[in-house]
Length: 143
Image 1: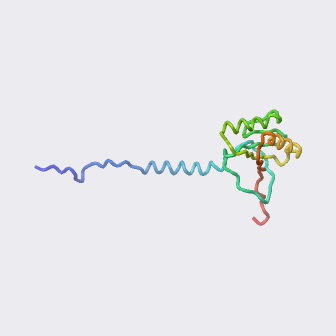
Image 2: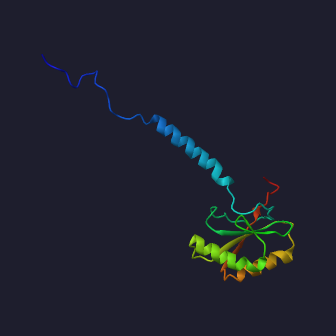
């Protein structure tokens, strides 16, 4: 009597990876849809410009936002005293371990010009080397 060990009735021990691939594809699609919608900072109506550069990814730079009524936000947290904005930016940079001294400024289109200048002065008090003004792309008549 001989026993057939490698016959057709032996069970395979390979894992089925098809359900895992399906789950990974669904997660990839979710991240691709959600990532562009993530915005750092307070929601403001930005001014339009013909000349805009691509924004860095959310979370890569510290953002200061000024809403239409003049409220100032550091990332998504309100700043009560504008005179302490420079200190808050320095603290946030240390918290995030940032060495580059760059800040994005998002100002609502209806905010007073003097308020924007005051906020820029407060940012400069933190020895920030570069202040980027964020705008949105103007829709042209040809599109």
